[in-house]
Length: 424
Image (cartoon, rainbow, N blue to C red; front, top):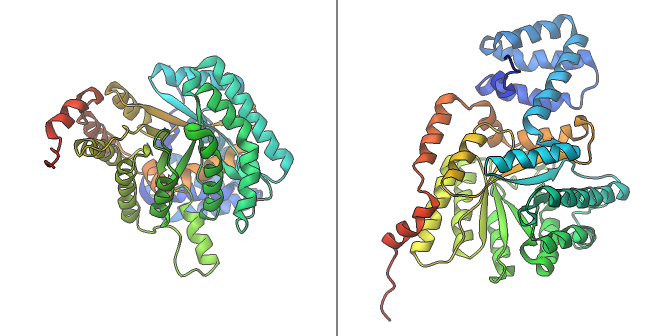
């Protein structure tokens, strides 16, 4: 039976794919059909020789029938993101998402689509939406496995980065019913990362809630921020070893925004690393140092080298006599390789959690489209992974994963290489 092909397969490789993604982001703010069609042709014209027949047909349609192109492209874009990257829409979708991931041995982290709010009424709506989501999840999955992500900017419409203390107090108070409910049932929430200007607010909100509710609230640390190592030291300074801090380590989600903001404000340097190698180095440094200081490091990544490195770091830490936890691996719903990577890691005994953007309660896909596109595509490393994947690279990645030791074998490996303590 014929079925609609995987939309990822329609993305041209390399620079052409990146150009297409830039157009999709730009098109979200365009209303005029002729202007949309013109920009599409302008962006993709330099790559026309590398495009498949379907994109060449779209370019002709954009040239001669801009209104038809605009309608077709809007429908295609909506299907692309809704079918591929949105995990659920409303009650029924949530139940299906939980069932789907649990059958595969995977866990889930739910993030209700949305970002900065413009009114207190809207912020309160987010609180009620998350409380309703948690209550529904209690009915369809083990309560202690419930995991959600919360964006501080979605819970207060008057955030002032220049006055982080007041903003943090308001946000923390608004989040308390959610965290208290999660604490009661054994679930948890990640306080999600946003732009660098929100970092101080994020830290203060986390501190208020962590000191009261412990690891029911968790942190998200972005390795591409030049301040990330200082943030890690701050986390260590407030850590309670009896209920250690958990943090999701990501490379970063707002690279373009951070660079453009720094340029607009005439800053001498950006708050983020502009060299991917520097970000990768910091990412691995934070894995090692987080484990070294007793924090629970969970990896938000699809990078196989990072996954392998984290397991090697765990083995090394334990061999040196440090107590640390095996990382949980968290991957974005809809990204290439997630099913294959998740299956292999689960078979080897590791915990894998799928970060799942959802609309809740049920609503129009377009409500969350701008946020969803930004979240997935603004990070250059994710964009590259999305448009430069290939069968060969996937097979290589699977081959590396298959060589990773199973979790049940780790105690024997650690015992064999344990570093003996010097005699007193």
